[in-house]
Length: 317
Ligand SMILES: Nc1nc2c(c(=O)[nH]1)N[C@H]1C(S)=C(S)[C@@H](COP(=O)(O)O)O[C@H]1N2
Ligand SMILES: [Mo]
Image (tube, rainbow, N blue to C red):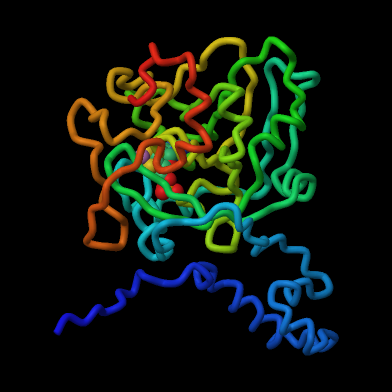
């Protein structure tokens, strides 16, 4: 008889943020005596203990659901691409050197008035929500993660780009002392990425400050990164220090290295192979499964319209 054993990674979505339970317990143990039993039963509202201003975990936006289980953190959190800390997937130990407090984000270029804002202030200004997103690396592995953050459109609105702005450029920190990978001179540091303003305004484009119901662990790109789930993972730049609005298409880190393999658009498409491997399927982190890759990573309904009239471009490389 065939018995379907539930594998450990097949955790239900509602358990994707076990820290929520932990925090609730901590609130109890911490003697949050003033909390009425009723409010504890209310789940997340119980987190609003006096003096506790943490925005995590944020309320999940139910509009963003998955067709697969959330990848447990022990897999996604120890298999990262973060070249600033080395080219292996095991950057977790090296990334502990990343100092994320204080952290300021600079907004400049074609905007009404350039400004700087601390990440904590930014979070207080825009508020946070949780979304379940798929992530598809160009190397043909994938994961599903509960990001916490806010729509990139909110940052664009704060920045007030002028009419000449057509693109948005993201820049990662530069600090060779902290990030040994940046001592490798053949990479075009700092890491940069870019989107059109139309892409940045799409609902799915997300600024990320947390994952698994808590602030981003360093190796995920703390304290602030982006998530562009319909594009290959390298478009989702980590540990941002600057967001610039430009008239011209920004040159990206990976284009600088190898434009024929890692272009500006980099939309996920199983039918367009990477010059050195197929993109038809993907290995799901934490499992022994390969699953078919979906056009626009399954987000075609929301984003395909962005590319009308751009058919002459290399949209999928
Ligand atoms: N600054 C910076 N951002 C980066 C990268 C990087 O090396 N440096 N790697 C990219 C790639 S290739 C992927 S797949 C994702 C990986 O994100 P994760 O480690 O959170 O899974 O980050 C992207 N953003
Ligand atoms: Mo990637």
